[in-house]
Length: 212
Length: 355
Image (cartoon, rainbow over all chains, first blue to last red; front, side, top):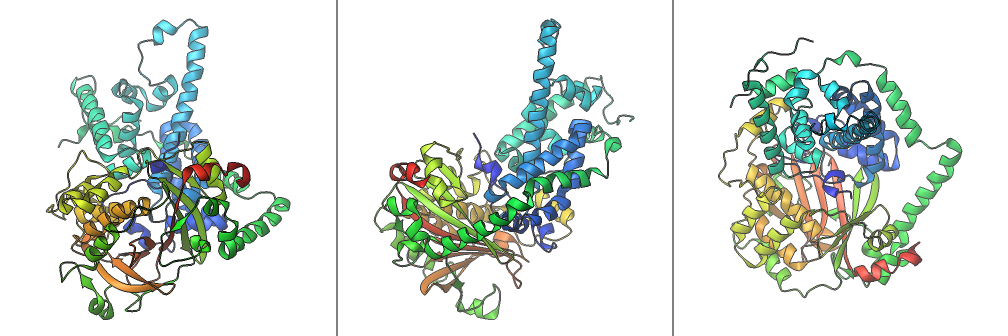
């Protein structure tokens, strides 16, 4: 069942509803979304404003499928624009929330395929002890990060990656994932605790970056 | 706190080798195909929309089966006829159009000076009889760029929430049990109810904490918190004077008074809470000839350099309009509310006739 927090009026905090950056724009995101109900062309301005950020995030999370996922996120956003509460000027968290849902569906469907293949190959036993990190997502994260996030629940992982890769703050993550701020805190705290344990275990260098 | 773990995760972000500048064009083309129906079909659709809008403005009261059959009690200013369900509000503020000008200051009743008009109104609202019906229908009209778009929020007294872009669509939403609430604004409404009869400061604290009860925001919290500083740095503009506590109370109170606009105790409670905020000023205005109160948030609530105003009915406290934007410029956002009470059972029984 859909939840209006996510799709129409998510809670935003400190100086919420009025992202200062939006003031410099000729029309805020909220204005564009409202205008697009009668004039769909107005949505294209919103698209151009946020495409790059959303596309890059989806690329980071889903590789080459990121383009289709980002495009799908904008299509879904267009269909849901009528519900958007114009008191919230900045639509970025809302858009990332939609993208996060599409990404989750993407990985879920990939895992279903993986399970099918695993069954046909009688590999259930091998995969039984694995976390909900599917093989596709594991590959996309890369061996180091996949190992670090291996037993972190999907919701915690989403929150952590929105923080580290999409530069959303806690309030925006709550808005994007449709969860209270306290839940964001606990999810990220939990994820970071596991992460630190992993890094401190000596299996990985603590501050070195991956050599890409 | 050591950030090495977060830094490490950030560093693991894959390079954008797959980034394709042409992807934007492809995605836009896909989007346009989705947003723009084939030309042959689009032309009649434009006419249909225009017709629907004209209908809703001119005669929705007569045609809106939902409102008519559900024994609606109109709650906004005055004793309007049923057609007033559709927003036709033109809010005027006789003192001044903008917050912060000399005229405004003269007319303003700052909270704490004499009996606050909000507290007086809250007392009046508290003593009003329980409303008919078991749900509040809010016709929410957003005007930006000269365009008006009306959608319909239906807040049931039991916490359920239904939405439809058309008023006639609500019956089907209710009868199919398409509840979208998920606890939406339940804690905000509860805080308002507490304020109506109990300790206002305690209720205001609950209002501030409503979205996240696991944390307590102190009213004495310094305004130069790391979160605000970070936001300022990112935006390159100061959020001068804003208080996180006041900001949350102001914003959450609006959510409560809109979601609970059909319930007198919710409105009364919100008014009592808003009267405690240091930056909120109140001016007199009119809407369609009926008296209104215009609540303007100050720097503690929204920071300097920005303005938010909530206009309410001066007799009932029912919200009429929200305006946000630069203090001395054209409003960036104007949302108008038309509030009525309905009965869900009667509403859902209309499914057949509403189509």
